[in-house]
Image (cartoon, rainbow, N blue to C red):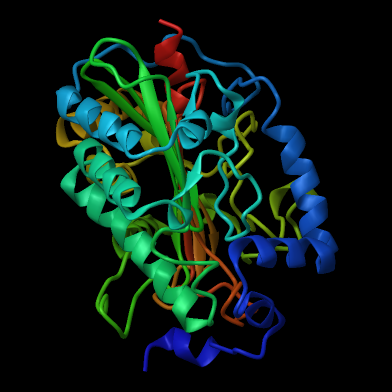
Length: 402
């Protein structure tokens, strides 16, 4: 029996609220009976409407970090796929899906199962040809490995919906989709997909691509029955991160471990919340100030640099291969300003959080407590990961300004 199965409690309040509901009725019910969700959403609603600045380490944006490059993407194929999506939409849907490149809705993505921000078109409410066209756009845009990762996250989401009897709340297509500006081989444009445990923000200009922010998660992180049995994600990020921490010399392990407990009494109030838990760069945190913490890569031998780039490659897996190479080279240029920090234990069975942070990338990994599963403590079968391009790089804004 898979480990997560013992935490599957269909009598829990969360499972009971979702069972048999639609996405809309479930969300309305949660807002009626869970005051904490109302409070969190009110705060988030103000954050995403703030003027975009970008994640920084001290409140000051470092300029000129993101050069215009040739990522070698098949832009004509991506444009064709974007136009194919538009061709499936009604006139009313086009008004919802097509937004200006600087539309504030670009910053309104969120990763809970709650259907709060109802922008664009929700795929499980759309026609089948629209759904398939969006999948083809994803396939044309992302690396083969990245597309498979995204599709796996969507399938696991559908698996969870079936597990808890809420297939209309969480399913393969319970995601919202938008396009920003008309697809073009010469002008900047982009698209966004967001929903439970998967959020992708894509910026495209000629042969260049940016795919941040991204959120990828899973509860549970594997499928143990049904047509998608064997699907599993986020294990590489977990295993490589743990390897990095375990290989550190003892004195540097102590420096990297900024908190020993996952919800440590020493944490300031701003460092943990019931929604994001240890994450600090999640949804609606576009302007978050995140001081550097932990061990600086310059303190370590070259094998650690190689391992760190291997870890980051997993977080950036959505990028096509040449774009990934360009981003890794960019990250390597800032190796002297790259930090690794850790929360929790680092035994083989421990749940943990870690963050890799530099002027050009933030990667966060976190084991969470249960939402639809009933584990009160963080467990390895519920994982959240986030990628940011700090200093104004998210959403391609740093490139757009050039």
